[in-house]
Image (cartoon, rainbow, N blue to C red):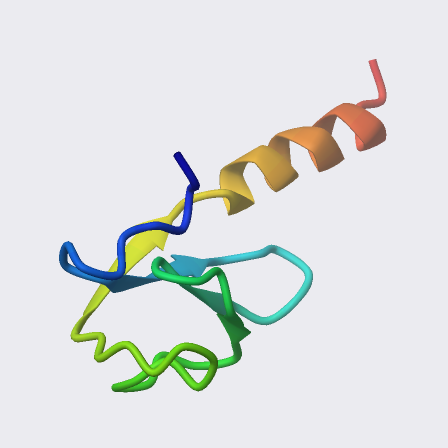
Length: 71
């Protein structure tokens, strides 16, 4: 089963926030990456009304903390 197979069942944008670059929005139906959430996916044409937040920036912060740790 594909990660992006949610076209028929309530499609949504996945908002990925990053520490050192702009947010990106990923279509749950096809995996298209956009700079902002739109009403329809420019790639597959799916109508999307919801945005779900992905806190992946926390993992980036942990990685940077490990790199810059002065212990």
